[in-house]
Image 1 (cartoon, helix red, strand yellow):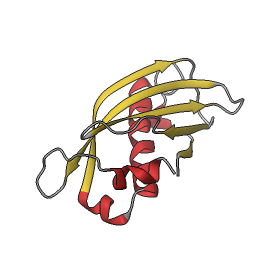
Image 2 (cartoon, one colour):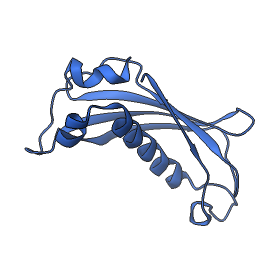
Image 3 (cartoon, helix red, strand yellow):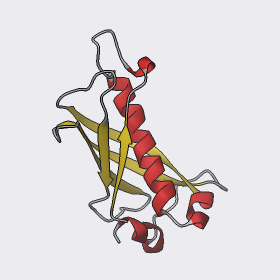
Image 4 (cartoon, helix red, strand yellow):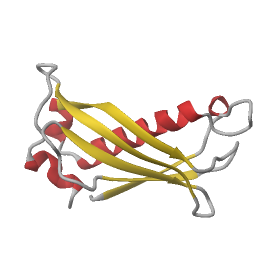
Length: 130
């Protein structure tokens, strides 16, 4: 599973006073898409053993959506992990196919048992490059 997609439609609380999705909501969606991709692609034993935390967000807001509109989030890992970290790419496209938000985020893998950083081994990363 090299790429993962998810459709999202905002709820009333996602909309700000300008009538579109609030920037903080886009950040939450980035996290939701990333963690959903992890649970969908990773081996069950890896999901049980590790958790991911964000160490960096780089986000370009290119457009927006309003109430009742849906975006398709597309995410993928383009580069091999570096130690405990890897970068994730995410794009949100509106119904017309226009990219409205683009992000590159860096995530670090934590061993649930120890609470410490854990190196992302090739077997853990493999499902994201298949």
